[in-house]
Image (cartoon, rainbow, N blue to C red; front, side, top):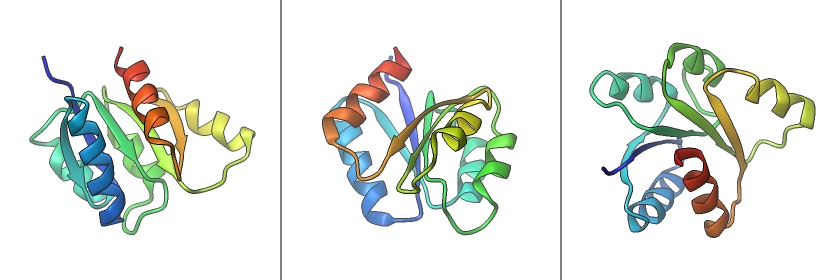
Length: 117
């Protein structure tokens, strides 16, 4: 069965390139332009994983994450975070990874495969 991944990023080029990379790997991909858009789309679709930028307009990402239940989330962000901040972010129960932008395509694919098993 095809796994579905939601890519949430306010930058069109990031959304489209990550979508293209993941589709090539056989994943079904849904995109959202903000945390609010993500929550709206979650009413209709249940992805296996959400790749989410941290810094986006609208509702703060940390508040959006609190509303998402039973879906693995990996942050995909250019934001430089200290190890302590990363630990705090990863301490939230459905946060499973933190992928630093810019990322290497092979690394992104490997991390997604590891998360989805």
